Length: 282
Image 1 (spheres, rainbow, N blue to C red):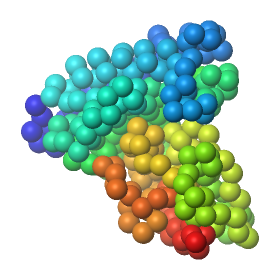
Image 2: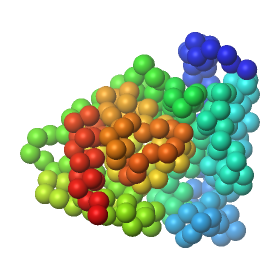
Image 3: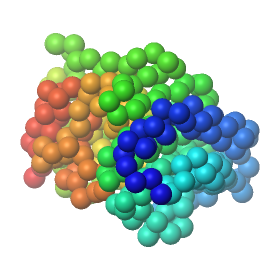
């Protein structure tokens, strides 16, 4: 088992391209052959009509679980579909071992409907700290990567989130109402204010990428499942952005966050969004 963070740093220095290759191969083998080719029996509902899973999700996660675990001996994999089958598997995020956090298809609903707005998310974390991340949109052939302290990149080009342009409406991607409690709905209503342009979010991973690129000002999400957020949080941080929960604290990967929370292009924007969310609470 890996004992020191420095050893993980060495692993990333030597094997980041191997992780990238694994992500690309999983998409090429299991996801893209089914894109716009899904049969009815390859799609199922989990918690409801907006929470879908496909054979592509399951098979891509199995592929990544096998390869990533082999790349880093002593690591564990927490994947969305594995946790759906065994919720106790999520506890590994709070353990001592390095953990791969995997969402094989983030934006499954879009994938099922033939929309190219989906991606594969992989993050490597330890002790609640995300150390590296890979965000791959295979239908767009876009790969975003980040290493803590090493910057964020899209297809090899450095990402800088920048700041919102003064005088323009703040663009904010928000959670779908189906995934919010009544209290969270009230908080999100605070974004319907002068100078703010809220809209429903698509794939969380691609919304984080938009923040890191500076084409979206902020997100306001009401759930905290690690596979949706880990990769994007590091991507935005390394592009110069910030994240805050409703109590003004940074988002914690292990959970227990005050929701909704925001990720934004800069700290000032993050504080502004949290203020708006607080104003919307009953």
